[in-house]
Length: 378
Picture 1 (cartoon, rainbow, N blue to C red):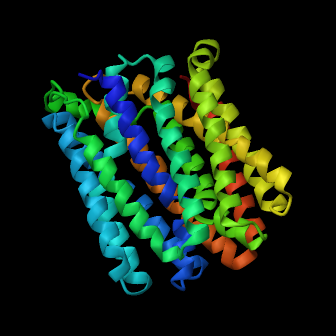
Picture 2: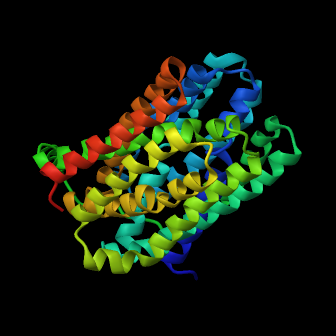
């Protein structure tokens, strides 16, 4: 039988294969359906809105019942139902409603799998990268394959591609490791509030929200911005892929980075790179070489940041609260921060133009880096 790390690697690969088809191209699908920038931002903000509370609920349920695998499988089924319904949604409001409901039901999957991974690796941060890098490999395959597909097919065909890839992820999730309910009591659950009252935990979560907010412009509007600058979908896909290749290199090097630098140092560096990256995209979108350099910085703005963040959560939250901790991190950063960032990006795009949209993203990243440097100690 395959070991837990191998099964977790397979899930990351399958899940991000689907994400690689969805993330870079869904805005193009929505634009093809006639939605404007603000309407696209509203639909894309729904997963982030769902993540404000939903991952915490699912995480606490997983900690208390040991039903982590069942929740992840159910999340995949919810995605399958939601995307299957997407072509029948009429207008922005219905599209947003489908996206919100689907996201509420599926938001628990990744945080729970992250907690499974850190538990399977006995919390050793340096072993995380080699498992998680398979998600990056899957993402590359999804981006390149879907970009080539959309160069030859109508944008509306994206939903069919996504549905097939979600089915693959559901099947792989059936092989995830099982877990046991966390030992604890009401006293143990109350200690979660005590952890959240610690100033360094609060600053850490706020900084992570800033990083997620900064990426709202990237995930929502980079493809549209590059297409408006004259780049073909296959080139746009290659740019996305370049960033993920850099991310893979970081995950492979993560054992050495984690051994050499503190998590705080790695976090500060990732925020600094994000501030530079989004300013470069905002003001240099017509220069392919500058976009290439900006995408290479994904190694830091996602690879270094994510590995350091989930490892920090594992240190900041006690045993028995790992799924809750990862879920709260997802809720308050990718949920609250991601929602604010996506809506702010749409507003800035409509009001002041694309350059201002990405300049605002750069400012979010700078604010997060200052928070880490000022208060966080991990």
